[in-house]
Image (cartoon, rainbow, N blue to C red):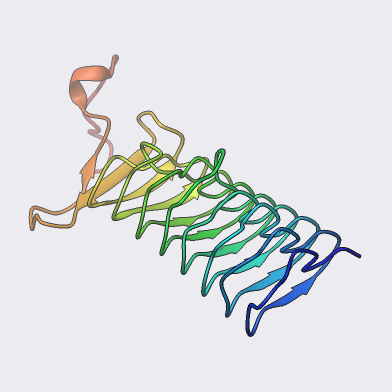
Length: 171
């Protein structure tokens, strides 16, 4: 009901679910499956939203969102070429682009972040041009910069730990 409600001359759009792609007035080659998927997007092209409110407020092109509120966007977001898989993955992206968020509540370091990959549960990216693996925004993350060949770095280190003892039982 009310899927593609505002559709005018758009081509190759598919919508299934209450209000899915309900306000799209221009743009084509989009797919929305789920209640309010791609709802407030008036102009987008080549985006795929699967899940309740996936890509709900995102007007950028070429986004892929799978999961409830994945890449939901804030306000009239214009981020493009982002991937969000998992409930609320990448939901704070506003103008960010070329980000990949894998896992429940994974997100970019800032709404305008670019070239960030976050993998884990509730994992917040360590920043632009980095892959971050772990959980949360604190010491439970590992990251690697795209432009470095130094290997993985752990957000936590010896300076922040207490009661460290050498392991002498392993020989």
